[in-house]
Structures are given as C-alpha cells and as structure tokens.
Image 1 (cartoon, rainbow, N blue to C red):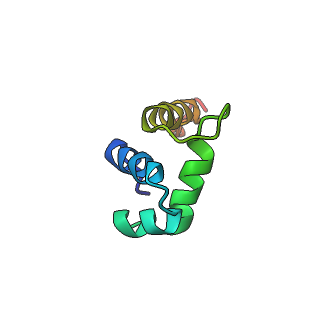
Image 2 (image 1 turned 135 degrees about the vertical axis):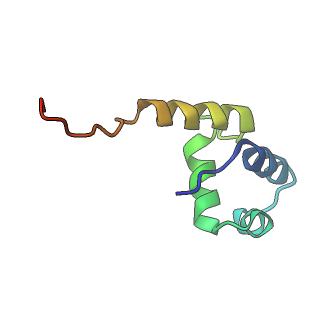
Length: 77
C-alpha cells in the first residue's frame, strides 16, 4: 500500500488554492482521482472545510498511530 507523502500533501494544498479540480491534481501526481478526493475529504479542516497540508499530515499520522498493530501469535497466546 502506497501512502500519500508530505510533499504530495503540500502539492495538493497548493493546487487546491489555485482552484484546480481533484481530477486535475490526480493527473499531476499520478494518482487516481478517488484517492485525492478521499484525501481532501478525510483531512480537511472541519471548521472551515479547507485543506492544509500540515494539518492533513498530522491527521494522517495520528490515524496511523491509533491503528491496532499486528501481533504475531506466540505459544502463550
């Protein structure tokens, strides 16, 4: 699974500020348009709906940290 990087989030925020569509942004980054749309929807500021790359990166990192980690089975389990 390939995650969106900090640089890609920065590019998304910059292109959104130029009023470009998620489909155009996806073509620029070589990603599927649904990936960009989900990224914007999931990580936008809930107060005003704007997408900030630093906030988006913090939200993504917090979600990643809160995921349950894989646990290998041991004889004690």
